[in-house]
Image (cartoon, rainbow, N blue to C red; front, side):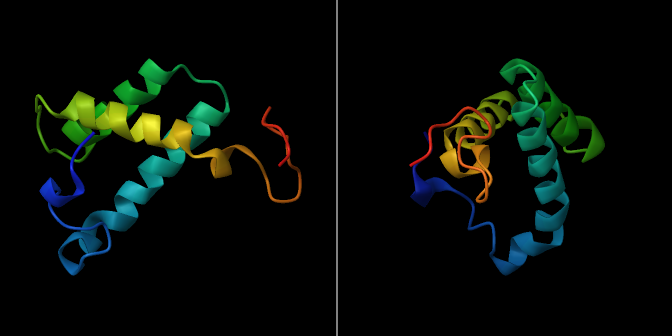
Length: 95
């Protein structure tokens, strides 16, 4: 995992706001795919494709590891897997 001190600023830093909303839509799409059961590697490939082709950031050796970290973070966020009004809806136990 990356050391927070080595990251290029926070997501909500003014310098990042110009693309934050755009990337949020891709994160929502990735989380939705995972929620529907799309295999992890397919979602990683989706995020890499978004970055390298759609956002025209080019191919980078760090693209896949970063996409894997994003998918792992989505999967680890227990709050994404239940609805507030329906605990357990996505296979998680009610707390």
